[in-house]
Length: 171
Image 1 (tube, one colour):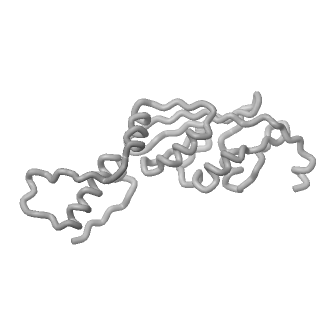
Image 2 (image 1 turned 90 degrees about the horizontal axis):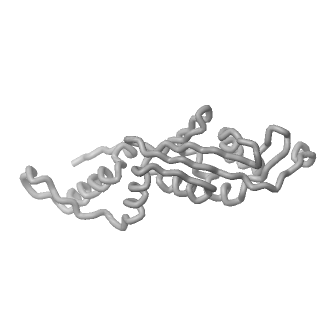
Image 3 (image 1 turned 180 degrees about the vertical axis):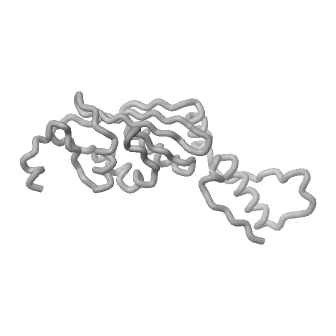
């Protein structure tokens, strides 16, 4: 605390630039953080959020305030993403789309590839698990709970979520 009392706190708000691209089973998220003219390493922000700190220490010993909006949106969830501090990137599964939305919500500037835009659009229009057509090769009838399970699996496959869950089917 004494270190903070003697520190110069700057009023300039940090800027977050974000690039999101869709891989086969994940989203690659590249972050750039700038405060004034200084580019802040991603790991500095990540550590501050993990430690529930309100300030980022800059190279010249000044401190910048982490915006409350960033703390609110990211503090409890940023640790769930796979991080590569050296390359200043995060990886998120499709099941973590809400975390990506939180990042987009606080970003000063964001760039999304076409696959990411399409996934967000599809996800934003989701209202319920649809009744999926059964394969024509299926001989027999499914019970209601079996059909509901099939519809759920179809939904997971449609939204690329099968790799995000461990599934065990038991009769």
